Length: 187
Image 1 (cartoon, helix red, strand yellow):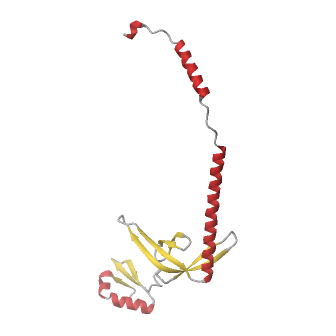
Image 2: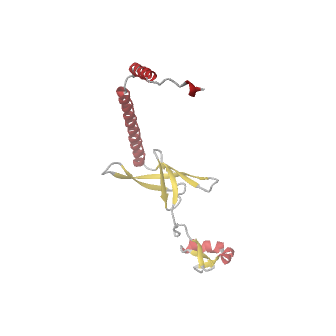
Image 3: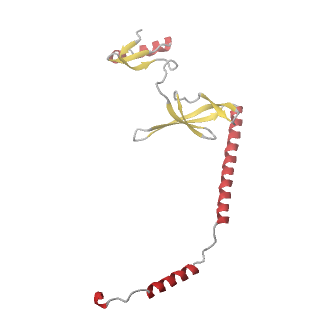
């Protein structure tokens, strides 16, 4: 079988081309005016030209990542997880669901739901969730402490009596210094 076919010629032989690529493991290029516009081949042989941006929904967090291909339900993803400055481990996740959302403006989002595969990853989820809750509580306590500090350092009510007295004296002085109005200019 040939390495490339024109699009029009490939239409009639598409089934044969697909069977050939599956059996041989080789790819076949589809061309238009001599330029490759598409590739038919076994899933493992065809490499994507870019990545797919997906939101990964873990039991303890959400992460947006660019993956080389879109994972399928039942596949396993391996993730490196940093537990501290010197500690790192692997977590194994099973793809339980792949969701697509296509908006009217052409923007597409892909969500992948994941569940832990092994006991190590399940223990890791419990640990990460406990750390997240502890960090949220510490943050909340810090905010509460700052609010209490602001309340304790807030100045008391201002006594406005001296200010009112000063304004009244200033008004009296201004009235006393006012020149008499010229009756001819008033009318």
